[in-house]
Length: 362
Image (tube, rainbow, N blue to C red):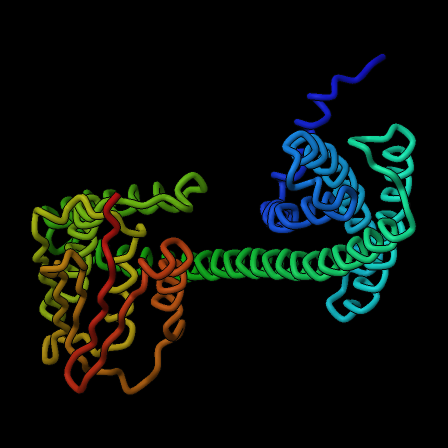
């Protein structure tokens, strides 16, 4: 069964496009290598006769692409034998040796065919053959260097991808740890507050249960697997955090004062779910919260469309568990999701602790 040559050429270019770097290297070499071979074969006639220039270039280009296909398969085979970074010398030596041998054999067979059919008046002689072999060895040497450069770059990209995957897995583990430690603790405190309210303030207890259900409905939604990489609007997060603040105010009474000042203009800004809960919990965890020394937290949008969370600084004498796990995980998550666009700024002075984070607008 005859193979369609056009399908073969298309398949070849598909294989080249799978790796852009090899694609760029190929078309970096061909514009000068094909004319050089043509000149060595036909001399000045190559540049003065349009028929020789066009026909000879086309035929030589096809043969170069064929040779490059063999070289690529050879490169993959040798890279599989010597894949490590410290094996560069072995890789380069074998690449150059095999490139040279294969390419010289192809060149010799092609020139014999050209001579046999008298392609555009070509006649094989020792001088033409010698210069063609020298040019081919030089091209093989350059190809070897570029192959090593491409291989090193691909290894670096692979290492970076693996490192990023490891960071994401580590971050996910940290997130799960924070969920497991914070949520039961919060539930325990809520139930304690509720048990007191049921006997002392039944009406408030009913509202407390409603707000608590709102909080846990939101927590269950954003903690599900389908929401691992999803964002929420500032409006949704504020709606949740109002219920969360109500529970905290019942628990701490006059010991906590949280103010919300977010402009309507920025309500559509996107953010990581539970950001505000994490920052509020971080402030409570590291500061004294009492009626004599109330913890004051302000949450507001800035003129540049960012979100600022600030609390007065009154550090606990005894360090609480979890340290900065919640805040540290939040910073890492923003960085992974948004790169530099998601950088969180943390500022601390003698009287206040401030976290400035971006709102993402899509």
